Every structure is written in C-alpha cells, then in structure tokens.
Amino acid sequence: MMGQPPDAGKVDKALGELEETLDKLEKMFLKRQAFLCGDDISLADLLAICELMQPLGGGRDILKDRPKLLSWKSRVQSALSDSFDDAHSVLYRLRDKAKL
View 1 (cartoon, rainbow, N blue to C red):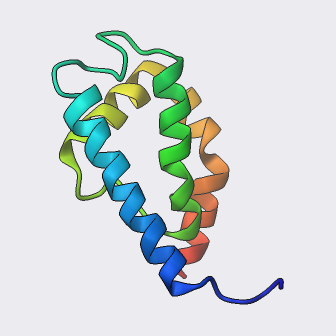
View 2 (cartoon, rainbow, N blue to C red; view 1 turned 120 degrees about the horizontal axis):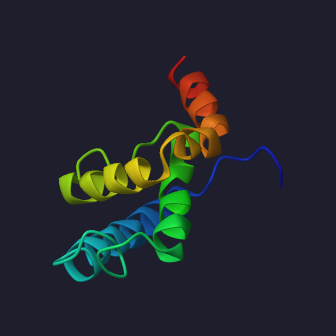
View 3 (tube, rainbow, N blue to C red; view 1 turned 90 degrees about the vertical axis):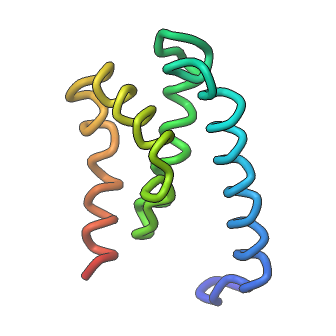
C-alpha cells in the first residue's frame, strides 16, 4: 500500500548489499586505476555515478565515509565540469529539502 513505511528488514538488507557493492567498486574496479574501466572516464563511470548519487535525494550521502570513492567522484565531476552539477541539480534540491 502507498504511504506505508518500508520494512526495516528490507532496508537493512538493501543497505548491506549496497555496502558490498561499494566495497567491490573500491577493491576491484578502482584498485589500480582512476576510473572504473581504466585511466579514462567511460560510460561505466557515468552510469555508476548516477546510481550512487540517487540516495542524496533522500538525504543520504553514501560516499561520505569512502575516501577512495569520493576521489573517483571528484575525478568524474572534474571530467564533466558543469554538466555534473547540472545533471544532479534535482537531487541537490531534494537533499536540501530532506535536511530541513
């Protein structure tokens, strides 16, 4: 039904799976390279950053305690320049509302 809070068990499971995924990104894909598929930005980086930015809309920064992923995000952001913030402007507004 609409309007019901999410099942706490499902949320905990999803957060656990998310942590596993973030670990894999750090330990496998970003272990020895600047971007997910090598030394240059690729479609994989664009798709991944869009997914990892989504929780900001609910006020949750899932990268804040992950310096390796934050560095990668910074590289992606730098490569995209203003387009990065333009693409995520709606998420930034939702994040700011969630803080209120």
